[in-house]
Image 1 (spheres, rainbow, N blue to C red):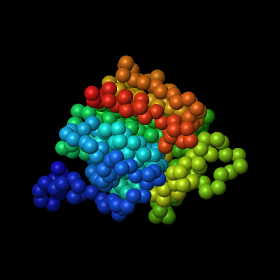
Image 2: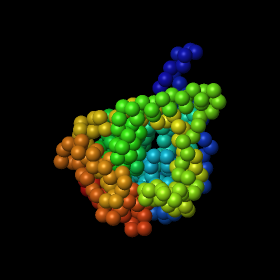
Image 3: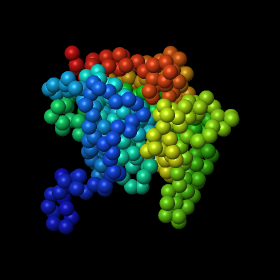
Image 4: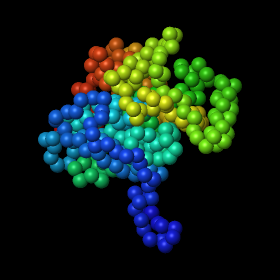
Length: 344
C-alpha cells in the first residue's frame, strides 16, 4: 500500500500505475497453443509502479498448490516469443508458469517505451515472484525463474538479491553489462573505448531532449549484409522469419532506445553471483557465440547445487525454441526444477 500525498489515505499501488498498452486476448504467439494447459492473461505491478503483463499457463490436470516459474527474455523479445514457449512447455510438465513482458516493452506499462535497465529489469523478476507467491494455487516456497539470453544475466542478478527464488535457469545467457562495456569477446575493453561510448550516449541524450523523442537503436535488419557473422544470421533466422517474428518485439522491429545502454555501461550484473545460495543451471549451446558469458558466470557460482550444461551442436538461438535439432533439454530442465524446488 502507498499513501496519497493529498490526504494521507491509503491507496493501492496499482491505482498509481501508469496505464499499460492495450492487451489482446487473441492467441498471437509464434508457437502453437497447447491443449494440455489453460492460458490466461494476468498483470501485476513492480516496485517502480510499472504494470507488467504476463501470460499464465496452468496444467489442465492441476490440483492444490503448484510449484511456479517466471520466465522472461530474450533481451529485446516479448512473451509471445521464446519465453512463452518455455512457459507453456514447462506448464505441460506440471508447473504453473508465467511469461512476462518486461517494463517499457510489449504489453507491459512504462514510459518511454523500449527502455532497458539492469535495476528495473532485475526488479521485474522479483515482481513476478511477488505475484506468484500470492496466488492461492502456488506454493510460495517453490518458485523458480528462467531468464533467456540477456535475461539470463538478469535472472542471476535477481537470484542474488531475492532469496525467495529457489532455483534459476540462465539459458543461452548474455551478461548485458559486460557486452555493453567491453564489446563482444571483450574486444572493446579499454578506457578509451568506454569513454567514446559515454560521449556518444551523452550526445544522444542532448539530441533526444532537443527533439522530444528517443532515437531507437534498430533491431535485426530487414536485409542481412553480405559480411554478416554467423550469429547475426542466426538472429535473423529467428526474429525476421515466421519462426519468431512478432510485431511487438524490438528485435523484430526497431530495437531499444539508444540511451538504454547508459546504465548497462556502468553496472555489473554478476557482482554478487558468488553469494547465490539457491540452485542455478547455466544452459548454453556448444556453438553459441555467447557461450563465454555463461561459462564466466558459472565460474563465479559456488556450491554443489550449481550446474553448467553445454548442449552439443546448438547455437545461441537454438535454445530459444529448440531450433532444427530440438536442442532444448526439457527433461533435464524439468528434473532440475523438481529437485531444487522439492517436488517429488
